[in-house]
Amino acid sequence: MLSALLRKRKQVRSSDRRLPDHLQILFLHRLSHILSKGYPLLEALRMTGWDARLKPVAESLITALGRGDTIDQAYKHACFSKTVTNFLYFSNIHFDLPHIFRQTKQLMEMKKEYKERITRVLRYPLLLLVFLIGAFTIMKRTVLPNFIQLFEGESTSTLWLLMGVDYFMTGMVIIFLLLGGSLVSLLFILPRMSVQNKLDFYQRFPVLRVYYSYSASYSFTTHLHSLLRAGLTLKQSMETMRDHHGDEVLCTYSKEILLQLGEGKSFGQALHSCPLFRTELTDIFHHTNDVEALQSELEILAEFFIEHIQSKITTWIQRIQPIFFVLVAVVIISIYASIMLPLYGWMNQL
Image (cartoon, rainbow, N blue to C red; front, side, top):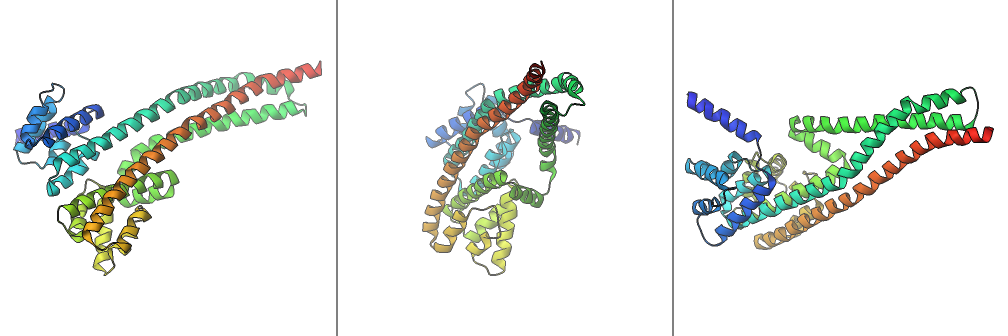
């Protein structure tokens, strides 16, 4: 009893940690390469563990698989990301491990690359913006009150301009604090929201709606293609996705699709009850009835979705820095105006 409790606490502590992305990518790359040579999974894991950096992970997976855990449970215990474990859940059915490991490696590489690019793009503008807001605050408390007091009682344009700059600085600081507080609050609130509330939240904001529509459509298309290729029917594939609680969106939408199918609707009509799915996905089921043709189109569509996600993220990243620099330029001009314009006013009065 005591040993079971200690083991459970150890598992909880280990689940709080996450294997670094670069180690996950390296591990998946090595393992998929060895599996593609024809080695069985346990032997491939042992050989992957020849690298000292990957040995603890390989040993953890061998132990978990040895006690009867499924492959997705073993990888979850080894602290891999949900991206990996969600894809590995379906490998229990189609058993195409080399392909699934290559696929998850590519997804992890894409996420790591864009995370690093966003960090590089935002690092300098954010530091500069924080510095300028600090300068804003100091000027609002020291320089502006003195200038406003100096011109008080005079109906000059300089006084109105100073008051406008003062209000603008106050508004900028309030907006910055509100945005920062909202983002921090969202990070704590969103994981605790129900699935339906999350879906409603995603649909309210255009940026989130576009991203999650492509993300959910890609996951659904990829997994449905692999399940159909494994010989399952459309209904059996939906039941498999419904039983996978690791991906909340797919689980919820699969339940809704099965409910619609039970009411006598076609598969294409059932997909319309899932608002985050792209129209390109629903259109396939309106004009394709042959299973083999459907598999081929789903594979092509999955490639289209991942390429479009990459294109959209690249476009957003390219827009972030100019927006921040325009904001910084406005702040700098405001600081310059709050100092120089009163001086010009004095010079005109001489």
